[in-house]
Structures are given as structure tokens and as C-alpha cells.
Image 1 (spheres, rainbow, N blue to C red):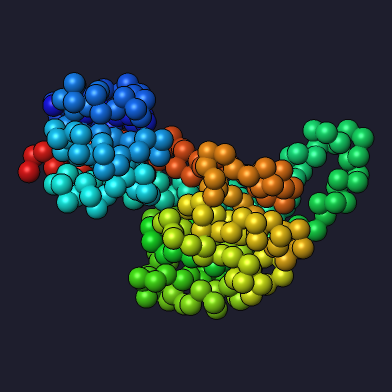
Image 2 (cartoon, rainbow, N blue to C red):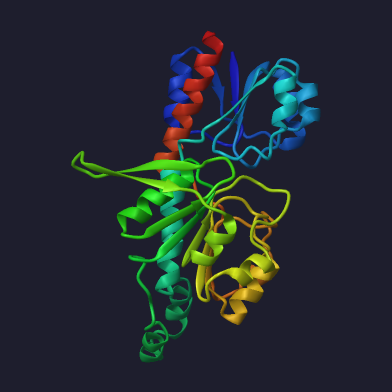
Length: 317
């Protein structure tokens, strides 16, 4: 049986599938050629990331397809409900990238509170002649320790982010429409651990209480953070989004950054991907990454082996 890995997979995932008797094709097939390739090669499982879309027309045109796998969490590029109605198995890897995304959140937070997003731009241009001026410009950094982090969406990634925040000595509050409370266990290198219970609260109260806010939600029909929500936040709040584009009103965010209401933002995802607005890209108060939340060697390895494990299990049954 043949599996097409269209957007890449770790070698460990390929090895696991090969050892189980599958033929793994790692050719990247253009979107418009996918249907012909799947049918001509008798592909039974299609594995994608975010680059390839799997919509109703492809599902209908490929009757031999049995599994659609998404390496990662969000599946907004797949018509999940329709595929399952047609009897296909649709799988993803929600646990594989939690730590990697959480670490990127803190990369943006540390960058924000110490102005690294701007310093990294200014030092190469002006550091030689204006060193003292730049030193003064970045002299009002703040510590994360003792501050309140508001986590919007308290699933696996939200909880992984909370664990790191607790390890730094931050207070963590959370809001989630489906989770009432979570026992968060922070584990240390020597096997010791501490557990604390975090009860979720309303978004309104989270906005008012948080020094920093991080979002960990799936794609939404509308904005979670818009102009009205920004107005209720603390002056000088920092906002990080490593979840999905379109959950923050970027026009309102830029306005709040320009006014000083928001001290900084860290964005890994954007309303218009892969072509973010120039007003976002050029804003000196935004720390920017190109949707790389799960882009670590460790996460990619876990994604590959987790997909392989699920596929092997499905065909065994």
C-alpha cells in the first residue's frame, strides 16, 4: 500500500511506515496534479501539512483514498467533516508540537520585554555610531517573573505554555469555552514535580487582569481580539499569537501599538498568509516569525512517528 507524504515528514516516520510494509512516496505533487497522481499511483493515505489542501472535490475524485493525515494540529485546510462522512479516517498530531509552540511563545515574550525585535533591526544599522543612544532606548525592559500571563485556549498547547510560565514564576490565568479547570503538572529534570490547579475564567476578566496574553485557539469565524477587547486591556500589555491568523484584528492591533496601549506583539501567524500586510511586517513593535511554531527537529520527529503509529493502527484494525 502506498502513502503519499506531500508536505514532508521526518525520516523516523518514513522508517516506521516502511518497516510496517508501506511504500512511502515523498514526492511533492502540485495541488492541481494531486487527483491524477493519487489515482494513478493507487495512494491509500495522503499526509499533508499546511501547504496542501484537501477539499470535497479531491475527496470525491479519489475513491481509493482511505486516510488523510495532517502533520500538526489545525485542520482548516481539510474538509474534515465531509471526509469522515465519506468513510475516510482523518488524523492529526495534536500532542507532537505543544512544547515547540510554547517555547516560541516565550521567544516572542522575551523578545518583547527586552526590545530584541527592534534591537536586532537597529544594531546592525546604527550600533557602531549610536551605541549609547540605543542602550538608553532599550533601558526600560521588564521581567516576566511575577507578571500575569493570560492564556486563551487551554488545550495541550495552552497548558504547555502555562507550565513554562509557572516555571518562570509567572501567575497564569486561562479562558476556555470547553474546559472548567486543569491540574497543571510542572516536571523538573530530576523527576520532581509540582501540580497546581488552574480554573478558567471569562475572557472579559482575562483581558482586564493580564500583563501578557497568548492565544491558543483554532481558526475562528470572527476576531477574538478586536478594538473593543483591546480597549479593556491593561496599558502596556503584550500580545502573542502562535495559533491561527484571523483571531486578532490586525488593523486594531496596529492602532493599539501606535497609541502605546499595546507595548508589543509577537506574531507567528497572520490574517493573510502567505502574504502578510506590509503594515504588520514593517511595524517596529512587532516580533515576527513565518508560521514556525512546530518547526523544530524534535517536534517534526514526533509528528512523523505519531502519524505513522496512527496509520499502522488503522490498517491493522
